[in-house]
Image: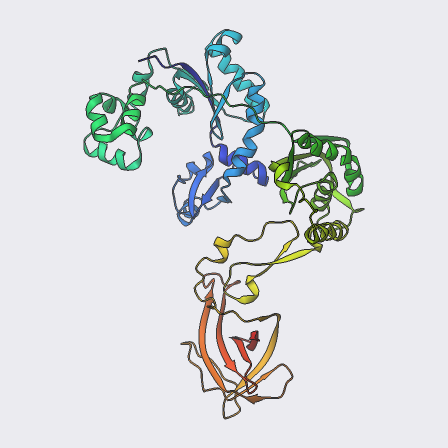
Length: 518
């Protein structure tokens, strides 16, 4: 069996937190937690000092750290923010493998020869990472990527005075021996090993190879080799992807939207031509803006077909102006503009048909032209979203943006109206009158029961008419724990004298028409 290859691993502690803090303008020295599905995915050092840990429920984390800043975890942001770091490291050490965002591996032989030793190569990597804005990075050198990564993590533990940890050649097994066995196996296997009295990698490595393979299979044998320092994994250097992104610095900074859009037109042409040269089109971009005060703005933009240079300039202008005008001034002058392609596709998938695009192509150009004059939200398309009330499900999406995910729209919404849905939904509430045989308005008590059967119904200013049929009420309770945004209403269905069915809503102010079954 061949010996493991000496490997260098550069590890950036708490990278997801650092990337999210940069994106949202939050100080990473504060207590910060990233959440995913209601659980803490990662947290800052300050949050850990308050007792916040990975996997903790959000409410418990906020109880332990009252000053906790909560952000949503975004895996795509991790990769996107780490890409400049990868390119910067590749500039001094070729042949880099991205183990995960925040962790890089490379063979040690080349850098050690060039810089005069493994220690010097590790220091050069740390200096490069610091120059790229990554403070507190750690480097580990050992036989194999796994041992090298654990060495880098050991350099950040309490009591370690150096950001570099070197494991001698052949010493990986002794270095790994006191570490937890859960580092190489899943939670279920770790629980089984703990019941067998095996808690460390050294105890796991002492088990006979044949017994481990028979009991745990190929995955167990692979973990056993790792624990024993016999790692067979090799660094798989990545092929750097084509660099299509563009960046422009403004000196002096520009404080007018029209000036910045005009100055960026040439670079927008260059951005599109780079992709056209390799027969690619761009269907999604990210625009990043830095102002003179240190502010940062970042937003993704989609296109229903593909971006042209004019479309790219429009997205930059829309992101700057917001609800303002094109000749408006900015609160702070812009010093840097960066455009990154997020979605590219082959031109062959977007070629026009034999007889052209037909009406759809003319509609697209017409809507795009109107949108360029009115702004991003000047042209919208209708989509169905999620919600309990019918008005909430009507979502207007700007032309070119992604519609709400079907998973959200089709998710369980307790209290929502079942099919079939009404044909006419009123965006503005229409007051209605619903009275009983005594002429008194029908009321709904706290238990959801009506005061009397309705006999007369009138919509708006129309004359009252007899009620032919009715059903309900059905309660809808939302955000009962939030006093400001709580909502409690009752739905009711009636059929008037003309046979038209109505969907009514009763709240604290009275009766309203939510929709009509045409």
